[in-house]
Image (tube, rainbow, N blue to C red; front, side, top):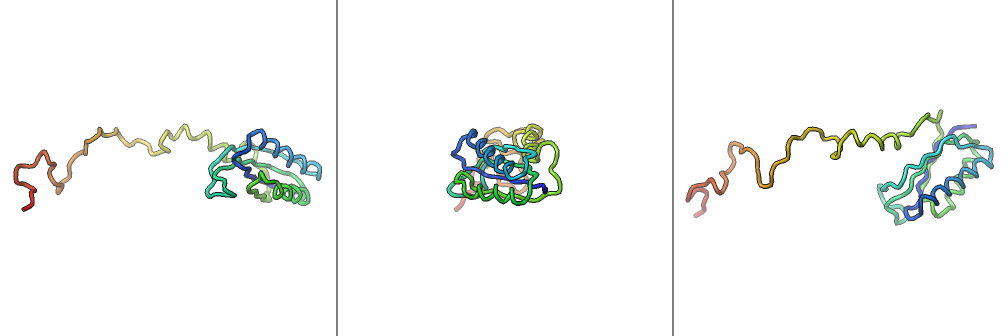
Length: 153
């Protein structure tokens, strides 16, 4: 049997329990056709890059599969029929990685980067209205001008 990875995107308006039900349904189809699911991960509700069937978000589910090609084809056929499934993609792989996938591993790393996504030490924030140090060639500030300076005739 061959190893496959499948990612499925389900509609945004279904509940997490319904997503788990879809996962069980597709797992059962694989098992009935001689395959097995080695790994399943729910990546959660994520924003889509573009709208798919009027949906801006979708529930992502990952399957690590060990099954014959006919079982995978049957699972994909059922995914294409199901109206709750927006998209799916299956890829044949050499091996299924141990542990979490990169999608779940990256979720925990956000705390290390900080709230602004890793911009690091940007220094203290300026007070409102503080323009900072003046550069040579800048116009003098209005309050610094003498009478008649900078006026137009």
